[in-house]
Amino acid sequence: MSDKDKDDILFSPFDATPGEKYRQWRQHLFSHAATKTDESGSSLADALTDSDMGGAAAAAPPLPGGAQRDKMERLRRARAKAGYALIYKHISDGDLRTILYNQHFQNGHGALQYLDAAYDTPITRSELREMDKLWTELSIARDVGVGSDSVSRFAKLLQRVNSQRPAANRHGNDELCEKLLEAIADSSRHFNEGAMREYNAPQGQRQFEYAGGHPLFPNQRNFAACAQYYDNLWRQAVKAKILSITAPLARADAAVDDALRVAHCGAAWPGRSGGV
Image (cartoon, rainbow, N blue to C red; front, side, top):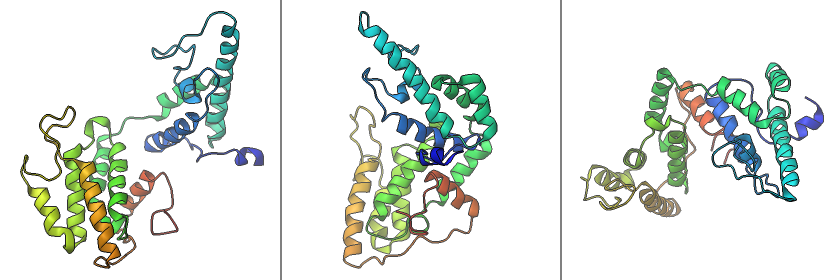
């Protein structure tokens, strides 16, 4: 990779490791590609999924007729080339680069289809068990530490880790809220009684609960409202020095710690080495 190529790197290159590392890389790829839009209204992300103007996907807008058609076709070819270039320069494995060059040169959609088939491997039962272990081990003290924004950061971490589980195995509002309440109760005697009261409250008597007639979450716990409520109380407690500020604790289980680092996309771990 030339010095110029290195200067153009926008996110961590893919090293041809299948599974979660590929899905994390794909997330970065699409997030950047979505910011690049041309006169057709289509983005590079649309082009990578063949849903841009003139694409074969069901959601793709058709090419216009008349004088504009030639221009829109040129723009579509340009998107295919730009999509391929974006993928190619964000791959560090030399063999994989060669495969993409020989089989999908200047075809971003084709390159992505190849990568999805080869590297977006299903999560195995053993990996799901590791995810369950990770979920159980999450705590405020170990993973975000005590500070003014501990609750908001921990709530975000829960959502982040949950989003990486297979769709059929993701936790719902009840599990998210209960995990947050458990973590608050475990990390602070000041909030223990109130958090456990809400945790143990029967359906219909909870402070943070959607109404029975809610169109999406009838009678489920309201995770967002619970997180906001305790975030405000927690910030006040830190400001009043009821809670002492502490950094995240070191984990004895290196495998869990590594999994959490993956969940944060390789960013510096908060509170440990200059992270956010």
